[in-house]
Amino acid sequence: MARFVCAEKPGNADVLQVRNRPTPTPGPGEVLIEQTAIGLNFIDIYQTSGIYPFPENELFVPGNEAAGRVMACGEGVTGFAEGDRVGYPMVVGAYAEERIIPAAKLVRLPDNVSDEVAAASMLKGMTVEYLVNRSAHLSEGDVVLFHAAAGGVGLIAGQWLKHKGVTVIGTAGSAEKVTLAKQAGYDHVINYSEENFVDAVMDYTNGTGVKVVYDSVGKDTYPHSLKVLQNYGLLVSFGQSSGLASDFKISDLAPHGSLYLQRPTLGTYIATAERLADVSANLFDMLANDHLSISINQRYDLADAAAAFEALTSRKTTGATIFTTGR
Image (cartoon, rainbow, N blue to C red; front, side, top):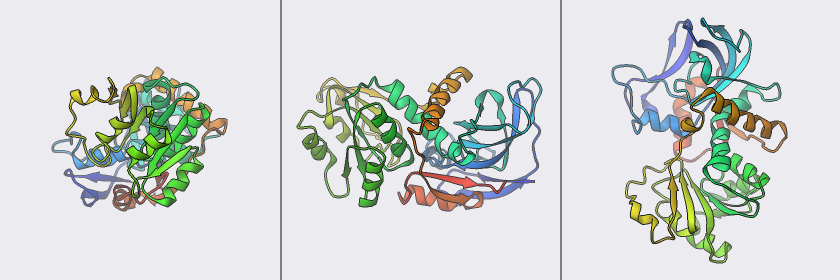
C-alpha cells in the first residue's frame, strides 16, 4: 500500500485527503515510479480549485512534478530500467508515493542532480527555460521586469537572465523577499507593498520602460504591466496567482505602444519526448555548470499537503517547496 493525496470535489486546501492504495501495475509504454520528492506549484492549486477543468465522478490527485526511482516497466518500454533515477514535469497526479506515468513523459536524472533538486526545479526550471530562451528573443543589455521575483520560478529566472547578460528588475512583497531576489541576480527589486511598481520601473529606466514583462500574478498586476513596456514590448502572462485578469481586452495593447501578448504553457513547449529532452538538457546543463542554485526553503511530508497549499496561497513561502515521502 502507498499513500496519495486526493480531492473528491474542487476547492481549497480543506478538500485534500490522504488515502492509501495498492501498488499499480504499469501497462504498455508505462513506467511505475517510487517517488521520493514531489514539487509544489501554483498550478496544483489552480487545478484543485476548479479554475482548470476538474474530473467528474472520480478522485483528483494534484501535483505536476516529482522525482524518484523506476520500480517496473511495462511492455515496450525502452530507455528505462528498474532502479533508474527519473523525474518529470507537467504530468498531473504527482502527490503519491507510487504512480504510473507514460515513459515518453520521463527524463533520466543526471548523477549531479539530486531527487530533491529535480523535484524542486524541473517544472519551474523548464518554465524559466522557455520564458528566457523561447518566449522572448533577449540579448545582452536588454531590460526586463519579472513579477514575483522571490518565488520558485522568480529565483531561478533571476539567475538565468543574469547569466544571459540581461538587466532584470523584479517585484516582491516584503523586505525579506527583496533581499532574496537581489541574491538571485536581480539588478533592482521593487517592494510593491511600499511603492507603485509602474512609477518605480519608469524611474529606474529613465522613462524608457522594459522590453519584456514576465507576469505570473495576473489580476493584481494587469493592466499595470502594460504601462511599463517599451513600444512593441512583450507581456508574457504565464500564471494568475492573484486570480484571472478577466478585464483583458485586445484593444488594451494599442495605446501602450503596439504591444505583444503571449499566454504560454510549459505543456506546449515539452509536448513531445524530443522537446522535453531538449528543454530538460538545457536546464540540467545550467545546474551542472553552477549557473543556477535551487533554493528549497520549505519541506513538508506528503500528508501535510493542505498546510503547504495554505502557505503558498498566503504568500508565506519563498523559493521552492517540496514534499518528501520517506521512500
